[in-house]
Image (cartoon, rainbow, N blue to C red; front, top):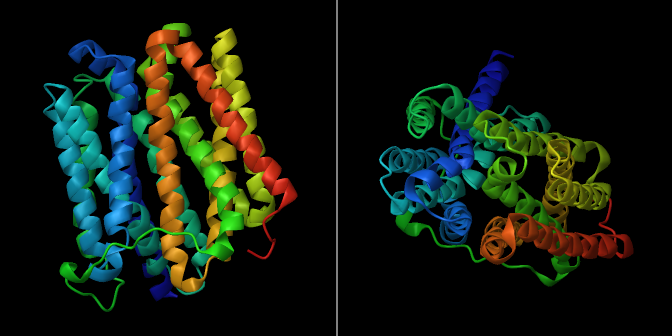
Length: 396
């Protein structure tokens, strides 16, 4: 029993490391308005700065997504913490737009390393028979960290001095503490090899998985696109249309979407992927409809409801998609298929968000948001109709 307690302690500490890394990826969200004032760039530039992060994640997933299987979990996670520290330093030293681009790219590299390696590490640190609880730890750490980033930055930038520096100094201190903790945790990969032996694992979808993958990928794309818009342009919308200039409030609204996603993911184990995918699509559609209402009527209450309902739908849809795709994939190709799903999901964070930024110039933020909502609603309805006609097998 004592051994189990020690392993659960290590598992929770591993989850804390995961959360610290993910905090850094959303930390700049409430601060983009301040950067706009300081450096004088447009809303399009805000969306590009945000999307650079996704390009970093996709690059790591394509080129080094399985590197921790080769070199070990701890070395890969130490590199991830190193990239997170460099990202925080870029924001601390930012004197121009190039620093923001570099900081976001480094943050994406950090998250790309952590996404697979930290999830596997948390699972492996748990005692035998604790897979379900370990999954909860990993899920809560991932989405909880993403939610705490804008909340932490919003509160510190609103109520403490040095709004563009203190949030990143705090994160740098958390990263340093995390590195010390990681060095005290055990390695879980028994047969480690030199980094030179690691090879990129090409994403792919085998024929027997394609029937499930299409709708799962669309739902994942829409869910991450909704998060992308929330975390990149919702603070600007709150300030411009709702006269909400309190960065703590802006950060809280974004955080609610991630916390709701955590709740949605946790319910998948009860209802199963066969039902969670279509229910997730319904939640995403409802969240998009609420967001359209918020844009049209300028109501903060609808923005909050959109974050809660859309976030829960994203959690249901994405974990349902992940479970369904993994269950339908051959064992030898499962990692490659999951990497492909993550690449599609992170493309949802980048491409639609940049599209919103491009449209903001000619038709305004409200018009761009409505065009985005219409396109995403069409995609999610397509996925839902396909799922109704060809439901995911319950046994996955």
